[in-house]
Image (cartoon, rainbow, N blue to C red; front, top):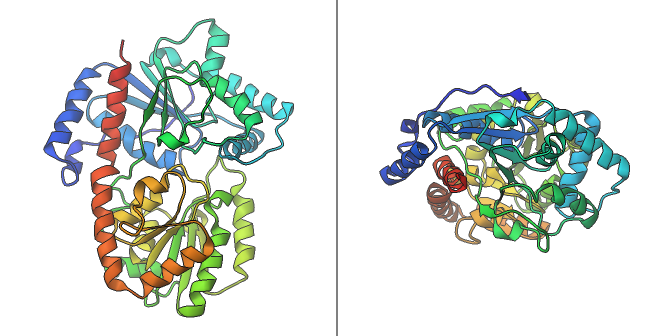
Amino acid sequence: MLEPVPLKPRSLDRYMQVMTPAARERIETLAKSLHNKRVLQINATAYGGGVAEILTTLIPMMRGIGVDAQWEVMYGTDDFYNVTKAIHNSLQGMETAWTPQMEEIYYDQQIANIERLEAEEYDFVVVHDPQPAGFLDQYIKKHGHRPPGKWIWRCHIDTSRPFAPVADYVFPFIENYDAAVFTMQDFIPTGRPLPPISLIPPCIDPISLKNLSLGDEVNHAIVDSYGIDPNRPFLVQISRFDPWKDPLGVIDAYRIVKKEIPEIQLVLAGSMASDDPEGMHYLARTETHAQDDPDIFILTNAHGVGAIEVNAFQRAAAVVIQKSTREGFGLTVSEAMWKQTPVIGGNVGGIRLQIEHEKTGYLVDDVDACAKHCIDLLKNLDQCKKMGELAHNHVRENFTMTALLENWLQLFVSLQD
């Protein structure tokens, strides 16, 4: 088998404050339809990034309602993850030097992993993103037939305008799947054969350590422990150090804000993931761009930043920024909205699902617009409060884990023979 991720069941009782009785009844009815069915979720890493974060909650919730759900992580070499990072970037539109050697590295790792996969044991197999996308193709080639269960490819990225040479290599692997799941309609590539498509946006876990209410005293103590002055306003972006997240642009926006509001500080915090070899390089670029500014704090999990610290940063911040130039969804947007902190996000991808411009936050296309809205919010506390309340309600209605659980159960039931 692949590397299993051990998780304990979680009862729906814990979500009653954010879930209606009608929603609970629907979930339990769907779960009964899946009695004795087994679900396997496969991705590339057990920590770092939104997919792992979602599965950390989704799998226990499925188990809590009686669905036999497992999560396994594929194996990969450094060379393989360098290739899949290139695939990830290319599917989001970046031109890449794609070579036969890269295809061989990717292909060999699919073969190595399929040898470990006990696919016949499961009724539903969900494969996340490009890293394990070729598993089904390799299983068919190895065994000469399809596995008995239903296979679903879950794409978490914006593939609307992919770099053609890489897309021509990857998307033929997807044709044999029984279903493909995208975050939104705009992400689906045109002119390519695809299986039946479902749209399921990611969601946050409102009762996780990252989202539970901590209290102002705790928030300020955590902020202060990192040398950030809790008595001065600060901006924060929580995300991987990645060119698509544009931390350099966030620093540029902060510098514009600082000319008008000198006391402002900036926190850039992110987790370094095992399947993202580019992360350390872009972290170094970000640190260089900060130019030793004492009011810029660049933090990672290596500094002890985890769920509680992220929670405190998002709650204590004056404004949360997610200035992505491509974004599959951006869980940090809904996390901050849940905490009633005003959010400024890039006018791209899944951020548009979460933010209604000038109502639940701001959508921006460039550094100047980001800085302008930061300044406006910092000077208008009443606006911040009103926007935060509307944002919280929007997340409650659309982007909590109970909604995600229900959507996945509905898809599984629809795929049953």
